Image (tube, rainbow, N blue to C red; front, top):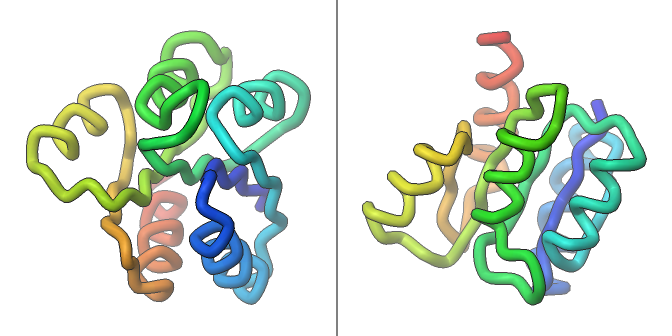
Length: 120
């Protein structure tokens, strides 16, 4: 499975990348949503994990793009330091299938990924 991770914080990006690679996933990385859109337009991706607050294109704009502009439905998980009900609800309204807050439990991320693909 190929997972795109959009995260501007290098430490968070390394943590997510390490967790995913250790579980056997292929990881593509983008430092912001704009780079993420470029990757999505050029490569096949099975899942997107994104932060919300990033330079250029924000994570919620990326979720909107995935769910309105792409022909193929790609599940999306948000990992963010924002833990507000209205932000979480808005992310889900835009089409995000999962939402974890930082700091996140790596096992919770892997469990969420597994549950998304068991449903489909």
